[in-house]
Image 1 (cartoon, rainbow, N blue to C red):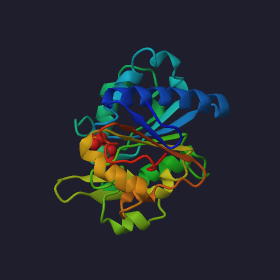
Image 2 (cartoon, rainbow, N blue to C red; image 1 turned 90 degrees about the vertical axis):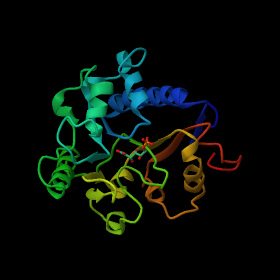
Image 3 (cartoon, rainbow, N blue to C red; image 1 turned 60 degrees about the horizontal axis):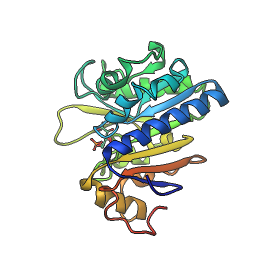
Length: 246
Ligand code: 6PG
């Protein structure tokens, strides 16, 4: 891995996953030592899966204070519980089926009702967890779409971008289900936001995001007091130049 500060470039997808797992362990230990608990918003998609699998095994699993962890999801597909396309299902299979996080501390997005009801209920759950204070996650993990989307904040969803709500509903034209997503104002309360990006197909959008070139959903991520870290592999970094990010 090379690079300091807000951009770290890993050799390949596997070393990115190891770096993400190590960072997760470190932030969990620090948060629990400082505040007695660690609240994480997990990314869906395919990129973080390997990091979750690594967390479920040694040398990571033994170091994570699982009983003090509170896990939330950055977004979810409104599909029945257990559907393989749900981010919850992916995280359960990769990680939660193998470690001991108390079930009441696993805050999956329940899509049993309408998407709007699910989004409102999830916003309420987050507000309750943070005791009415601004919801400050210790760690937010986010993937990045080739079109610049993060979580389910998709390009063109103007009302979702301009919202001051913590959660919202999104839909992609090509999908036959809705999505519930956390919003940028919520992500921006976090102590640390980490983008996990892998592969050559993401090189253009990574460059645009780091240079602030486009009007992309990812540009909405500007933590109020926290930090941003880009954890990307060499292929995703292949269009960057020395003065990008750093
Ligand atoms: C999802 C997401 C989404 C994802 C990006 C990147 O559930 O699909 O949360 O924002 O992180 O689309 O996905 P990949 O990691 O699969 O490229």
